[in-house]
Length: 106
Image (cartoon, rainbow, N blue to C red; front, side):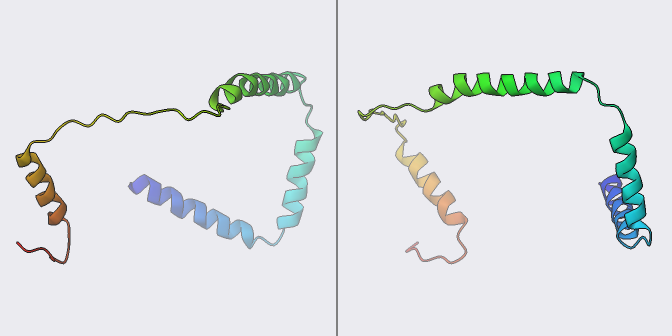
C-alpha cells in the first residue's frame, strides 16, 4: 500500500513537471523524430496479421455459437430445495437484521 502511494506521488510530480516544461514541444518533436527514424522489422507485420487471422477465426467460431436463432421458446426448470420452517424464520430474522428502521410487529 505504501509503495502504491509513493508511485502515485512520483508519477504525479513527474506529470506536473512535464506539463509545465518550457521546452515541451521541442522534446516531443525530438522523441517523435527518434521513433520515426528507427527501422521496423517485418515480423511486426506477421504478428499483426496473425492476430487478425486469429480474431477472424474466433469470430467465425464463437459468434455463431453464442447467438442462437431459435423461434420456439425454451422451457426452463428451476429446482429449489425445500426449507424447513426453522430455516425460513432464520432467514426472515437475517433480512430484518440489516434494516435501519423497524416497521414490523415484533
